[in-house]
Amino acid sequence: MSFENLGLSEATLVAVREKGFSNPTDIQREVIPLLLSGERDVIGQSQTGTGKTAAFALPIIEAVDPHEKSVQAIILTPTRELALQVADEIKSLRGRKRAYVYAVYGGQPIGPQIRALERGVHVVVGTPGRILDHIRRGTMDLSSVRFFVLDEADRMLDMGFQEDIEAIFRATPSEKRTLMFSATMPRDVLLLAKKYMRDPEVVIVSRDELVPGEVEQEYIEVPRGARYRTLKKIIEDDFYGIVFCQTKRETRELAENLRSDGYRAEALNGDMSQAARERTFGRFKSRRTRVLVATDVAARGLDIRNISHVVNYSIPMNAEQYIHRIGRTGRMGEKGKALTFIQPGELRRFRYIARQAGVEVEKSELSESLPASYKKSYRNEELEQEYRQRWGRRQRRSW
Image 1 (cartoon, rainbow, N blue to C red):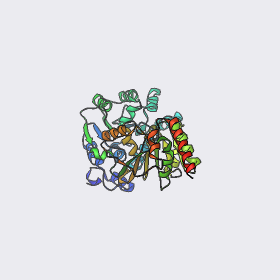
Image 2: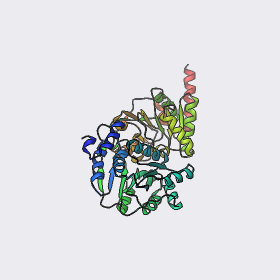
Image 3: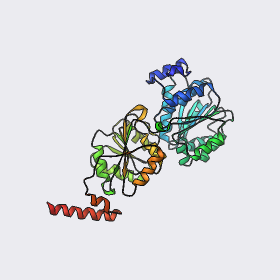
Image 4: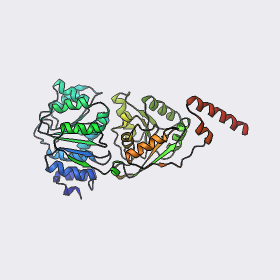
């Protein structure tokens, strides 16, 4: 099926062709006709990188009345970065239609946002906190909203936005269409859908497709003291990717060590100001930075083509986190590689996570040069250092 068969207008089809899209993805093929022809709410389960933004953006563009200055669609995202990217994607799909799209998020002066809203915006994309701020100030009127979209709903609930989401929902009219998109459907998401959606159509991309099919997935059993050395082996090749850490401190320290060793690496975490995060993201997108060391929160909204690798320097907390991380590569049919570092005592837990995610992860052939006795013997950082010193002395005596 082509885009011509989905019911889009010729003006929108021209914009789609100029964008370079040829055939719709599975989520687009299912969702676009539902939104163009029906009135029911829609739940879409699809991994990031499968084109879900266009799935809801194209019908919204079709429905926008350019003669009205009011907000006609509100799209909530979990992060500032994702808000910017979704807004940019919608702008690139509107073609010549005078549909004004604006991203609203915290970390920037509110004055320019107020002036833009006063001039007239048809589609608002933003984070819940800043949108709620505008509603309370009286600078954003959602009484004419026809589409209410939750993008990456699972992550928004993980980040504690449920109360904000519900407050924003109450500021919109009852006669609207509510759309919810999520890579996973945990219990909290389903409860939210049951509370606020009316007899929704459910579109689920098959389980296998939730994890990008072109991603080669491997795990590497690595002692804690050897993680950094192993990482350097991986990024010596033509590496352009993201290294996920569990803490903000670890992202800073790892990025500093990599830069000291001559790698073009930068950290991205929630402690950084919005301006700093945008500059870092811009350098990575333009490939001036080749290694982005990030926490899950900071990297959640990154939508960049041609990322070659994702490295889980720290094991993900659960299956949802694993799926979201590896979804940064292998996007839109491209090939990618996901590597997970497994430290002693973590293999059983990781196998459980992989099972819950519905994936098979192969053991990597990349081997460590440390002796097997070293790998098995340590229990903590102090013992690790002791064994490293002992092993080093034995090596020097053998020379």
